[in-house]
Amino acid sequence: MPKGKGAKGTKVTLQTAKKAVRITQDGRRRLTLSKMGIITFPQCLFKLTNVDELDLSRNLIQKLPENIGSFSSLRWLDLHSNKLESLPESIGNLVGLTHLNLSNNDLTSAGLPYSLGSLTNLKSLNLGLNQLDTLPPSMAGLDNLKELGLFDNRFTKLPEFVKELRNLNKVNTRRNPLSYAQGESEETLKEKSEPEEEVYLVHESSLCRKCFKRCKEQNEGFSRGGGGGGGDGDMCEEKRMRTYKGLMVPNSVAAVNQDVWRIRKVEHMQVK
Image 1 (cartoon, rainbow, N blue to C red):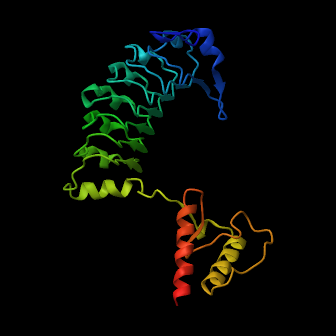
Image 2 (tube, one colour):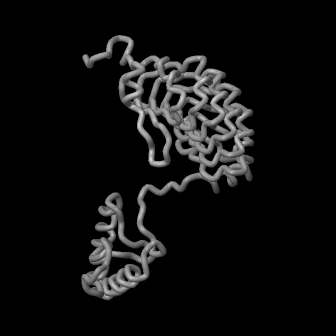
Image 3 (cartoon, rainbow, N blue to C red):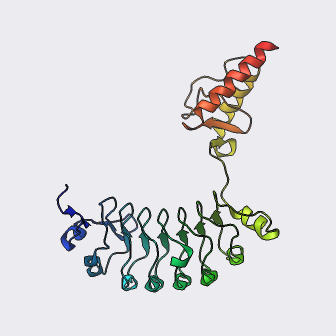
């Protein structure tokens, strides 16, 4: 059993926490205590009043302390992949928060406090992978919210206020039992939702002029049954790759699919 870890989980001391603080590239003080087997929120953290970002993700925390709202310096809080079933009302006192990640917990709608609507500086809120079927109506006041994660929950219908959040431009509602008989509101939300693509290719518009010209020549040469136009030159990593109209150079995820397309293309030409 690791040192400091017992039936009550890993014990985090103030000294341990201080040593774990790092300065981010933008000058913020981040405390990372992820994947440490922590069960109880370390009370010693409240003495670190100058910490801007706190990462307690991938632990076993079941409950946040009632005085969590006194951690007023926080701007970024990551609690994803814990065992949380509810949030204390005082979380609404963390008015400086811009990013809050609560995904992959055991949160229910009854466990979300009305005070969530007080976090008016939030830009990103992730509530995915929980047991939610509705949201507190107070969240209609989150005017600065840009990204909202609601994936893998139990929503059959989303609150009307979601489509009214004026700065919201990304909503992830995948894998919910949503009813599509919501008329215009559903269409409005759909426009903001993330695309369902799982294969990503570099579009021709993303290439520099030289690379685009080379890829185009290669594509035309392949269409004529040749090996592709142009020599090696100083072309980027895209050289020697099979290309198709509008879609240039697959990444590693799409490589297998691209090979399948190439084989089919060659077989089609041989049949002719």
